[in-house]
Image 1 (cartoon, rainbow over the protein chains, first blue to last red):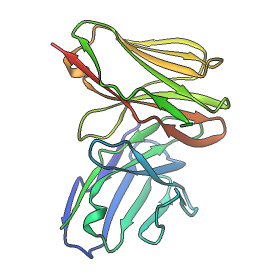
Image 2 (image 1 turned 45 degrees about the vertical axis):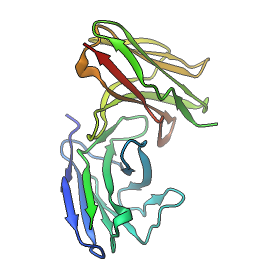
Image 3 (image 1 turned 90 degrees about the vertical axis):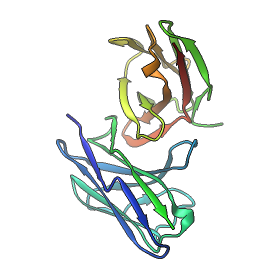
Image 4 (image 1 turned 60 degrees about the horizontal axis):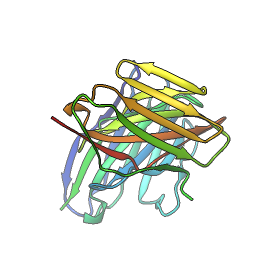
Amino acid sequence: GAVVSQHPSWVICKSGTSVKIECRSLDFQATTMFWYRQFPKQSLMLMATSNEGSKATYEQGVEKDKFLINHASLTLSTLTVTSAHPEDSSFYICSASGGNNQPQHFGDGTRLSIL
Amino acid sequence: QKEVEQNSGPLSVPEGAIASLNCTYSDRGSQSFFWYRQYSGKSPELIMFIYSNGDKEDGRFTAQLNKASQYVSLLIRDSQPSDSATYLCAVNSYNNNDMRFGAGTRLTVKP
């Protein structure tokens, strides 16, 4: 149980392209979904927290107009990196939680490379 | 002061030994505690969670929680080379779905 599916696994695209990443909870309802970014050999960095039907809460320093998050249902959240540039290249990971005090279950991550 | 602190390591133990991973947290209101394992290049996977003071065992893994000392640990018995990974401690406050992660401890189990 508690499976989170994240797509795509890999994205390679040109600078200026917008990229959408999907995160789905397959066998539970996720009241909250989280988006993280991780650079090589560094810690997980929380980007934003989203609750179904609400606007996402972004961490300090994360541009909400650049990283658009939509959490339209209890099983789906999307992250769109708009007008991506090489410095946005990173490992993006989503997670989903079924409620307060419940564990976060992680997707497999999306490796984004902007040329 | 960081909210969740872990020794970054690397922690190196021989195969078959017990690996002990430690974590301290600053928020006394924290109610739930999690250990995740992250292999290089992969996303974290949940190993254990613990809510009450004391020990919780699951196979070769034991989580220990001491809320008075604001300390949580993970013991891995009979360590295997496949246990080599970064272990992340995570802490959640009650009624607040705001999980904070430590920076992780890198464990190497040598054959």
